[in-house]
Every structure is written in C-alpha cells, then in structure tokens.
Image (cartoon, rainbow, N blue to C red; front, top):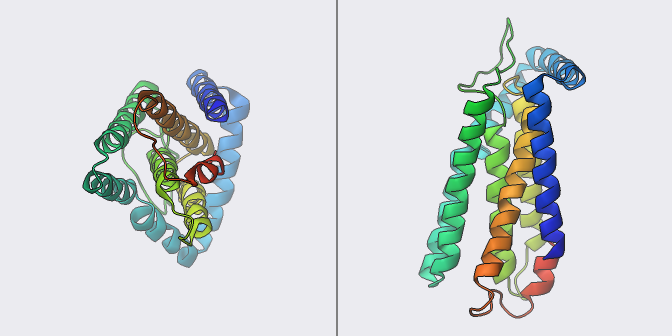
Length: 227
C-alpha cells in the first residue's frame, strides 16, 4: 500500500511538472521534443512500410477504444461474479481519467507537430497523449484486477503482464513516431495515467477495507509483484 501511494504521488508530481514546463514553454524541453520528432519523422517518411505497421498498431491494436473495450469486458466479468463495487470502481476511474485527459487538453491547448509531408494526422490538442494515458489507465487496472483474482494453478501471468507493458510503451512510441505527438505529451500521458490507476487502487482498498477480502488466497503475493 505504501509503495502504491508513493508511486501515485511521484507520478502525479512529475506529470504536473511536465504540465507546468509545457505551459510556460520551457525551451530545453521544447527543443528536446522538436529534435526527437524531427529525427523520427525523417525515418517515418523514408520507411512507409514500417510507418504503416505503426499506424495499424496505433489505430487498431492500441487504440483508446480498444483499451476501453477491454476494460468493459473486465467490468462485465466482475458484474457476472457479483463484484459490483469493484466493477463500479473500475468504471468510475475510467470515466474520471477520460475527463481529466480532456480537461488537460482543453486547458493547455498545445498544438501538435506540423509537417509539410505528414505520415499521419490526429484531431484536438496534443497534451497529454490520450492514447498513452488511456493505455496506462486500462492496462494498470486490468493487471490489478487479474492480480486480485489470479489463481495459483493458472498460467500465463508473465505473458499478460508483458503484453500490458509492451502495449503502454508501444502506443507511446507510435504516437511520436507518426508525428502526431511530442515526446513530453506521451510522458505526461503515462504519468497521469498511472497516477489515476494507482489512486483507483488505493481508494478501492480503503473503501473495501471493512468488507470481504478483495483477493483470492495467494493473490496477495501476486499483487505485490505488480506494484
């Protein structure tokens, strides 16, 4: 619990720091963003095949709607098991994270990278990356739910955890590589996304503390491994 609280505070503080630096236009950060984007855009423009793979990954495999659909499946599964409080908590957290994301985009109003020869496009403001934030929230919460209910005899935990990490990191890469986000947009999305997931876990534990145990026997050690 303590480690989860620390991670929530640290990720939130770093996200706010990035928010301030972007808002005030701190030139070292903006220069870094531009240098990375310029280098990746040159590569993307010169390698259309690899660029198309990245577009498929970002538009279908790791799209925010894909992540929301996976979250919805988890909520339905929890409801079928009679775990209404946990299902409500996941649903509420997903909605609040989306509202935070949209609020930040509107408040900051950061423009996306502009190119004379774009390889992809995206609407709305850039900061924070919605793809990165949604993936961090969804994958973090899904792994947590699985950890709570994982049985010792089941196999494949490492594969699922690895897929979640690859998804979160991979979608961030695609957004910068395709030239629709700055690197700091993606970093902020990851930080705010994990902060939302961590706060969700902490608050659920506090609310459910006086109720029935939230985890199956033996799941506690698994949960520790996800912190």
